[in-house]
Image (cartoon, rainbow, N blue to C red):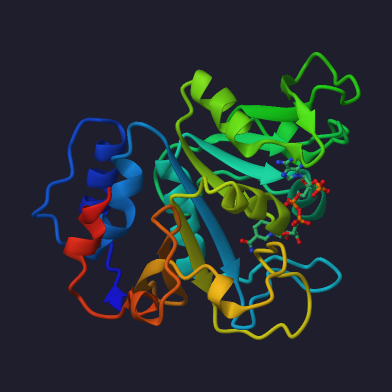
Length: 277
Ligand SMILES: NC(=O)c1ccc[n+]([C@@H]2O[C@H](COP(=O)([O-])OP(=O)(O)OC[C@H]3O[C@@H](n4cnc5c(N)ncnc54)[C@H](OP(=O)(O)O)[C@@H]3O)[C@@H](O)[C@H]2O)c1
């Protein structure tokens, strides 16, 4: 497990890499650069999905209370991720349940464009993020969704039997120069991007609390046997209040017991971290 000690200098450097004013070097062995460098330095598109969950894998209570699951360091991590991407994507369920701002407040840095998947045109326009003066908001809708007010920036995409194709969503954002994206939730939205094999990295931040019931952060179609489970290579970071698994999802499938050992708990991270970036 690597300890994440991120100094102001390191963070400024990451923002500089993000803006194309600095580059990541193979000599950069610091844990913060290993964790955030691939996001900051991605130029041709990068999809990060992040879940903040309890020890028992919950992201809310059954009644929908989802605030304060992540500890302060988990929250700072999420805001660092937001600051390093061009756009943050959430499903309409998250907007309706949490009314989030999706802004960067815990660290310095720019807030990303906010993208809401609202396939059927259910947003009312009264949601907080339309009126908080924050970063731009883009609504992604199915081609047949109800007409939305002209005041909003709406992208219409063809809706198939399974809804909107996540790759079409990414294409639409790329056309607007939004290439680095954070898929922040909820479970159904993240699942669609994982199912489509579009997620480069999955960050699971685990906070030491047990909720006992309530929704999980990722809900994929059921599998019968564990040999069909995702077993991504992962680095583990001690954030402070939370523990983070930084999982590589887009590499080839790993199903053998040998490859499942790739969750690395040592400092020998460099070779792995630069191998496929
Ligand atoms: N702790 C965390 O990290 C975190 C982060 C965000 C949210 N959350 C929690 O997650 C919960 C909400 O999750 P959720 O799964 O219910 O809602 P969600 O993923 O935010 O939104 C689900 C809605 O978006 C639609 N959708 C998503 N992707 C789509 C696509 N490609 N095409 C068409 N429709 C698409 C779904 O359509 P269908 O109905 O057709 O599936 C559904 O209507 C809340 O409790 C929130 O607090 C936790």
